[in-house]
Length: 246
Image (cartoon, rainbow, N blue to C red; front, side):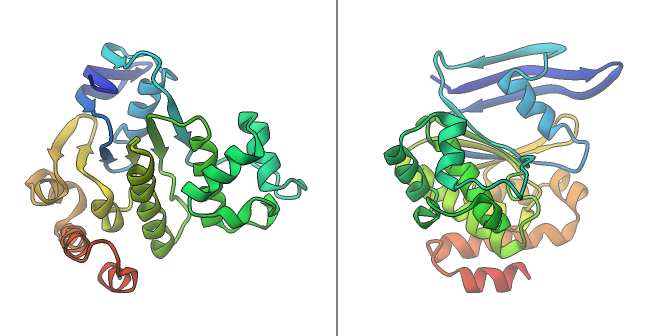
C-alpha cells in the first residue's frame, strides 16, 4: 500500500484557500519533490500530511503505524549553548550513542559526534538535523526547504546525501524545495504546485511542460540539463555539476 495518500485536499486559513484539489500518493522507497513559487501551498501540504493543519476538504491517509522522520526548514537554536552533537541528538530522540553514530554515518558526517553544535557550519547543522530524523528508522523522510540558507554546492551535496540515505535505508522521501537547479537530479517524481497541482511526473516531463515554464521561466531548462548530465554520469562529478548550475 502507499505510505501516504492525499485525495482532493483543500487547505484554508480563514477565508483564504491556499490549496485545492490536490491528489498525491507516495510509494515506498521513492523520492518525490514538491516545487512551486512562494505562497503556492507547499508547506501547507506538508502540514496537512503531518496533521498540523486540518484539511478543509479531502482526505490524508497514512499507512498504519507509519514512521516519519522530519527535517525542518530551520531550528531555533541558541548558538552560545555548550552542547555536543551527540548530546543534542540524545536529547531530541532519547537515543543511545551507538544509534547516534549510525545515524550520523548515514547522514555523511560521522566525525561530528563530539563536535559542538555552536561550531557547525550551515551544511553540517542540516546534516545533524537529518541524522536526528533518521534515529527512529523512518519509512519516510519529510523535508521542508531543508537546504534554505545553503549555497548551491552545499544544497547539491545535501541532495546527494538524501539519495544515499534512500539507497542505504530504503526509506521514501517527500521534500519541498526551491532549488530547481539541483533538486531534479535527486527526484523520481516532481510535483509542481501553485495552489493546485499544475503538473506532475518525472523530472524530464515536468521540466518540459508549459505550466512549469510559466511559473519558473524558460531559463529553468537548465534544471533539465543538470538532470540529464547527472544521470548520464551516475551522480559522481560534482565539479562539473557546479559548472552547469552556475
